[in-house]
Amino acid sequence: MSLLSVVVPCYNEEETVDIFYRALVDVLKTMDIDYEIIFVNDGSKDTTLEKLKALYEKDREHVKVIDFSRNFGKESALLAGLDASKGDYVTVMDADLQDPPEYLPKMFKVMEENGDDVVGTRRVSRKGEPKIRSWFARQFYKLINRYTEVEIVDGARDFRLMKRQVVDSILSLREYGRFSKGLFVWVGYKCEYLEYENVERVAGETKWSFWKLVRYAMDGIIEYTDMPLWIAFWVGGFITGISAIALLVMLILSLTGHTVTSASLIIALVLFMGGSVLLSTGILGEYLGKTYDEVRKRPHYIVKTFYE
Image (cartoon, rainbow, N blue to C red; front, side):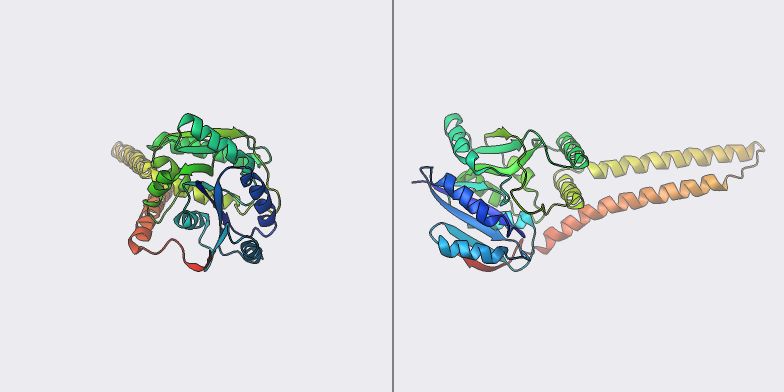
């Protein structure tokens, strides 16, 4: 019998883990497949670990718990779960039930019928999400798909069913700055998406604030395109050209006897140029920082305890 590994990153999910476990197991028991559920406690500050340990004691045959030494972020938790997975098939799910477990049988059916290597899911609506957040999300997908070599489907979730070969290919990519939505697509393989309406959290609150999502989007852009560097180049060139023209105009006015008392213009030009330099330096700093992280070769995560 084939083995399915279910990877579940958890951060402060004390209100959802029990509900998620029951809903997931109810579905898995209807399927003709063996399974393991790998919960990754990403340095939770509430009672998430205690609840996960209780599930482990209750169902040692199927439940594993990876406990980090501190919070390393969802990307690291996802990687740890994939590293620990042994299944012929692997899926990644959130503990808040925004990834409906009842889709798993459908995903297996589509994979078998169409010969897919990956069956992903995507939200066709963002019902219940703040409008400003939804707008920024749509702009992010438009921007990153325009300037990168891979296409990240708008509304795509991390929730996907993958064959072992696909997972091994993803695990072979060990860069420190990980953007899984891009990595899932970059490795290639035949992929198909199932669509569904947005599902709100079953309990608790999202851990993704607006600014965390902005930072996550910036990481994705920096990891997969050098477009910001080109923007800095063209902005710098444009400002240099404008400044040169302004200086040339002031020189001509001086030579033709006109009095040039445009201190305010000069100050504005200096501030404009200074701002553009700071912008360009900031963009370069982001890329340099990413390079520094890669050079240090620090581990993506540290496991304090592994309950298996």
